[in-house]
Amino acid sequence: MYNKKLLCCLTDDEIHDYWANKEMLKYDSDDYAALLKHNPCGLLLYLYMESEKRPDICIEMATEVFSVVMESGLELCRRYKDEMISIIAHIDKVHYSDAWAELCLNLVKKEIIAQYPKGVCTYLFRHPNKVKDIVLSGMMGRYSFNENFRLPEEAYNDYGSFKFFFDSLKSFDDEGFRGVIGTILGKNIKGSDGHFPHDFIRRLLEEYDSRELDGTIAAFFEGLYGMRTVEDGMPQRKLAKEYLDFANELQIDYPHSAYVLRLISKGYENEANSDYVHSEVMFY
Image 1 (cartoon, rainbow, N blue to C red):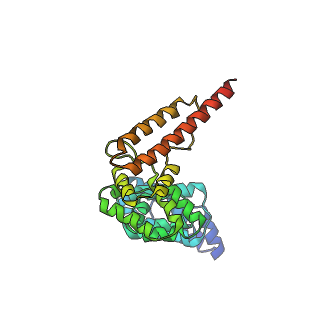
Image 2: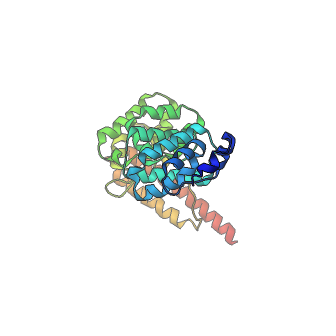
Image 3: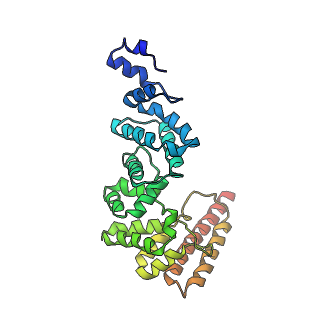
């Protein structure tokens, strides 16, 4: 790709234009250096292909390229964003470090990528004070966090670490953090018996003893109010019964979880009634 005879005759602006629509498909140190300077996005396809095969050896290059992309302030097209998301996902399968996670988090903050990668979720779980910075950064930061953050798998390995995370959020003493906690806990994570909420959540709700938090979890429950096919109400009525039955099972040991499940059951019942009316009107 690197045409030295041609480039030596060009001005700086012409050299920049020369590299503007070039991409590296096979590694070459000269091409890499030139693209990093003039068109860092031209390295993303190579990184994407390599990270599919050998993600462990792409970490240093991805870190350098992503950093330059951020510093450049370029407006990225959808293809480049998708390539970056895929590269991150490949690397996250084999690698975690705070430095890598912080880089990916900065990509989110700069709205280069919208999704929270796996490493970012792990990082925020391990450093709950960073959640405060995001949530208090403004409405977009709070919305992005509520939409994209999910507790990593390691959160469900140790109750002490799980509770520490939520105790930290609770200690920030900001009214909005109750909504943040409810949003996180409303993600549809099932317990050891196959039912929502997870065992750790059941225990936590009893310790927090907050009806307000219970209501927030139900309001943000992931299974409710989403996109679905509207039928005659029977599927939603079946779900309403399932959640009510399990609420009755939990009532003695976990009354707060039982309350959450009753609210969810009521939500499904309301959907069922709405679906039935809609189906009758449409049929008529």
